[in-house]
Amino acid sequence: MPLTLTPSASKKLGSLLAEENNPNLKLRIFVSGGGCSGFQYGFTFDENQEDNDELIECDGAKVLVDPMSGNYLNGSEVDYVEDLNGAQFVIKNPNAASSCGCGKSFTPATGGGCGNA
Image 1 (spheres, rainbow, N blue to C red):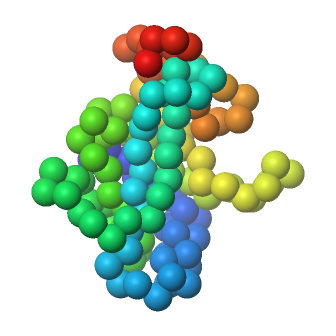
Image 2: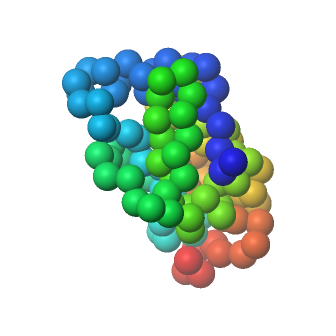
């Protein structure tokens, strides 16, 4: 499984999806090139599940991950954190060799980094 959700993340995602009032809506988590550490995480709502997407369900929350992103997210944990910096989803990625201060960008242990994405 590419990633897991903490109870906090599942609860928050479930409430966000319920607010949208669309039973087909899921959260898509993806990795793309860019960011200050080489790769960055992205989050978007998506109604369309592609044939090769992995669907992760946890306490009613549904998350989609495409195969390329799944390679970088394998073993990761998604948490929802409320602190002095605000409220946000945070990915704890064991495959990241380093990450930037904002927590939205990372360098994979297999290479990458600024300019090498």
